[in-house]
Image (cartoon, rainbow, N blue to C red; front, top):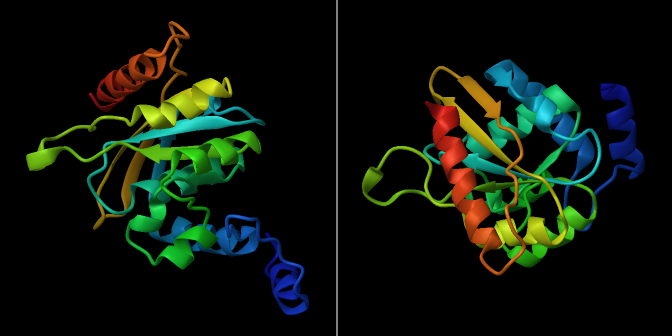
Length: 200
């Protein structure tokens, strides 16, 4: 990344922003700053396809940084950007989150972004009453991936906001055992089980 090239594009207005507000140059700059703040230990990123779509199911959802840590780890390990659904509700302003790749918390938006060949991340729900471990995975996210025959990857995140040390593990793709109306529920449950295993 050349700062001079990024600065030139800002000045002459040729920087790239997509229809969801994703600013490629700004994301590269912020990613470089994040690398100074966080210490990332990564495993399993060979499961992320070099090209084409993938759906990352991220859990557990405990702190504020999980979506951004996974985004940084994905860029570092694969050179690809991850578009996290609902990250505009977590920790930063909606406008800034959109510029860093967040997309709306909506199945139609997830489906549309997956169709472009992007990597999309979705967050597990939070457990009620502070239970540990990953919460349930919304089958609507899974249905969007299954409809497009996109691999579903469990992504376990462990770390601490204060120390800045994070461990991100990508598991093997979840195999869809069927194509009926309950397939999304089955894969959702399998993804949650895979996350539990990755976190053990």
